[in-house]
Image 1 (cartoon, rainbow, N blue to C red):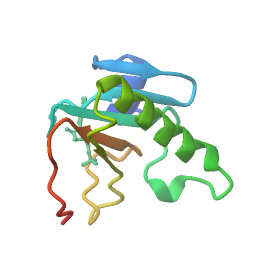
Image 2: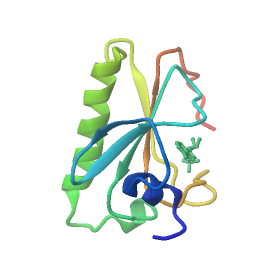
Image 3: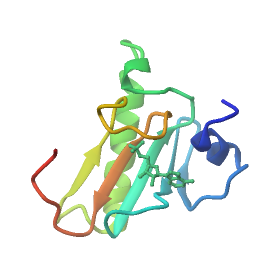
Length: 114
Ligand code: AMP
């Protein structure tokens, strides 16, 4: 997608602090972190929201969660705990229209989600 900022990060047209990539997912540090660890796990394929994940494709969601868990371990936040968030659509607070999961941790997070 020509006008998608995350596609541009994936293609290397925009620099980013990439900490993991393979054929299916890429992970890079959020440019505006809300906690000491704030990483985005992003499918390489341009899907807009979770609604675009085909019913049959459980492997992508598994892959995103497994990647987040591994990076949490790498960041040293596994034991204390962390938050995985996917914002979906306008009222869900999604700003970048390329599916992504936030991995947030490294400080105590509020239990409020609203
Ligand atoms: P969301 O509100 O769920 O769409 O989150 C989008 C996230 O992308 C925000 O936390 C932004 O700070 C982050 N973001 C936007 N542009 C970039 C960028 N170029 N590099 C890294 N993170 C970005």
